[in-house]
Amino acid sequence: MSERFLKWAIRRHFRGKGFKVRIARIKLGNTEIDGEVEGRGWKMALEIKTPGDDLTRGLGQLAEALVFGYKACALVTTLRKAKRVNATAFDRLGLVLLGVDSKGQVHQVCPTYAT
Image 1 (tube, one colour):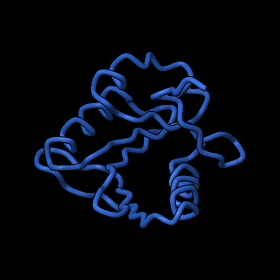
Image 2: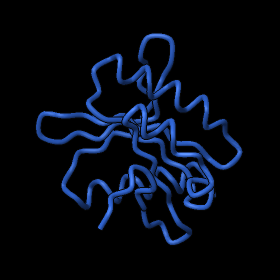
Image 3: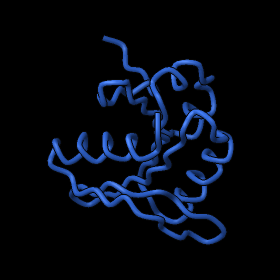
Image 4: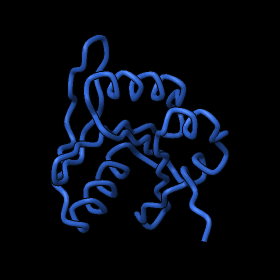
């Protein structure tokens, strides 16, 4: 799955919920993130990683985004890869892990909520 497809799916998902989405490189201190989602009074940083990318680096980028004032941060990857990730770091840092399936549907993998 390409980065372009992941960006398209994320943009469509959040715009469909009425949020403003900006997919562009945003410089934050020593790193950059791939985009942001903006709601009423909050912003969420986005870092998009294809299956071949380093997810650990993405965690570092999102941790720095928290330092720069983002209220929430999400790592976006394929659903298959997201399901294989150990969610401990996401839980401890309060990060969101989103997976995109082959149909372009976005699934929240972490945090999981009991129903």
